[in-house]
Every structure is written in C-alpha cells, then in structure tokens.
Image 1 (cartoon, rainbow, N blue to C red):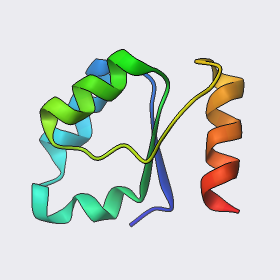
Image 2 (spheres, one colour; image 1 turned 45 degrees about the vertical axis):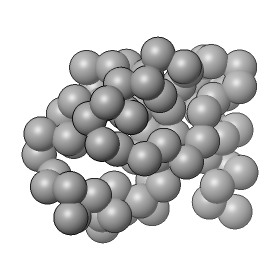
Image 3 (cartoon, rainbow, N blue to C red; image 1 turned 180 degrees about the vertical axis):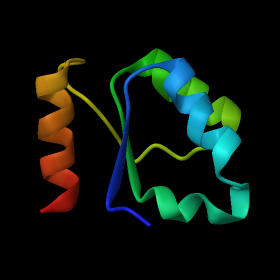
Image 4 (tube, one colour; image 1 turned 30 degrees about the horizontal axis):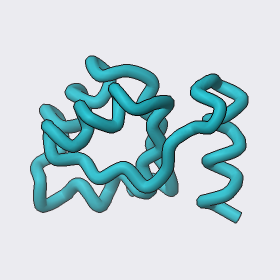
Length: 70
C-alpha cells in the first residue's frame, strides 16, 4: 500500500483500475485527481477520488496532497 496515488489523466486512472482488483483498491491510498474529467473516469472505473487539484495543475496536485497527507 501507498499513502497516495496521483491521477493526472483519464487514461492514467484506467491503469490502476486494470492492475488492482476492486477489493484491493484501498492499497492505492488517498487518490488525488487533477481535474473534473479525470474524476469522472475514476468514478467510471471504480476508483474513489479523495481530492481534486485546485487549480487543475501540478502545483494544485501538490497542494491537494499536502492537505491530505499532513
């Protein structure tokens, strides 16, 4: 298991969904997505997103991770 997983695109959301069975998704830790379209794909593939970057940028991702992991 990891503390957090960052998801920067819809296609990136599909990779852990394919690799990690649903009953093991807790191993992804807290999932942070970069924006609304990525959030939607996470929902579609069964990955719960815990936070979304604001602004929708790498800097926003860092800020969202900081907020979750501190």
